Length: 193
Image 1: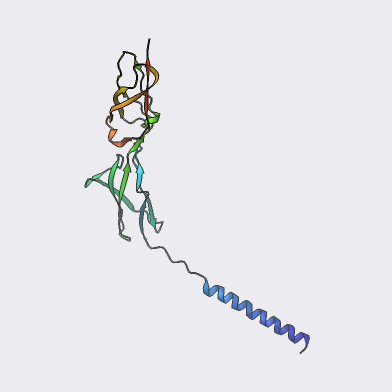
Image 2: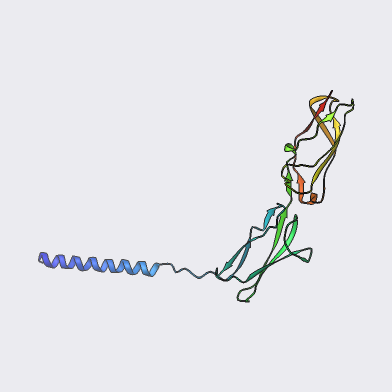
């Protein structure tokens, strides 16, 4: 066999292998399926902020824009989801091309960090009784919520006197949207003239 015939045979073999590889790549290529049309609601649990909260709405296909959200609380339609509690969200598709979607939506109470609350100082009077109302609470923003606290001090005077709490409550128009965080101890400054 001549050198030219061998080279021609090798070239033919290479071309055949290349053609097989290309065919195999094309034959095994995965075909992506079109996503199923629909509405998906996510971010269904959030924390109270004092503002209206909404789920994340994903619509497939993305060019479908005629979806309207409705909100329900205790079986009644509400205009927005603001206060802490449980809601039902319905995503209504206006053109009927895909089914409506509904989900439960929860707004958790915001937490007041008791460790960050500065209790008012007590004027020394020789007793250990303590009662105060704190109107500006850390994390409450402009919400109408106050802290009412009562208790007994471990001493009648001092810089950092430990308070044994006998009553503690959040009050005000927005109190139902908050809860108290835990704290190891609360301290009060007792001022002596």
